[in-house]
Image (cartoon, rainbow, N blue to C red; front, side):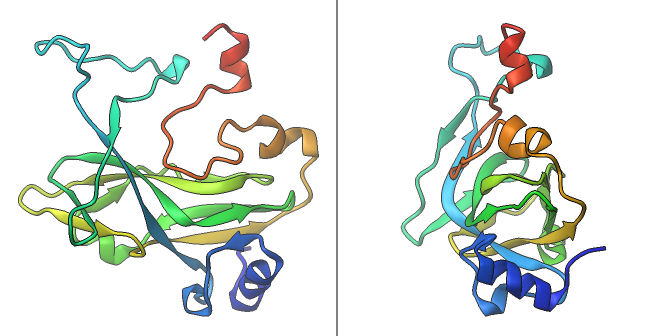
Length: 193
């Protein structure tokens, strides 16, 4: 079961999600907007030009990214094939009986914007949502601006999760409110990674 309009309004009223107005609440989702923080993937300056840097998944190594300045008109231009980390303006404080999932808006997918399908939010998570966006077009630049509707969040209630198994106790991105690459988890830290 997913929450619908009146329950979503209740989440906003209780502060489970902040940065939302009445116009953001849909029948079964809440629209999210993008902030003005962008980390663009760049060539790693320490890697020789004729080599591709390798990302070790088990070590949760980040890509080489650089913060991006906005253009004079307040836009960030995402060129064909480029990958960027962005972040929502909305902040979340999920209780232990609620999970959420981010979905890209279909109108954005229709102009070639893609999200990396990493939008699951476990109970107990608190923070802003980092988005992994790519321009999949071959011939068009996509302009991203602070406040653009970038997707929607769907909420699913469930039985209470023990605090020790919640994101609060186990997650790497708790209380992160800016665009962020991979962070080590407790398991990778313990393994010396």
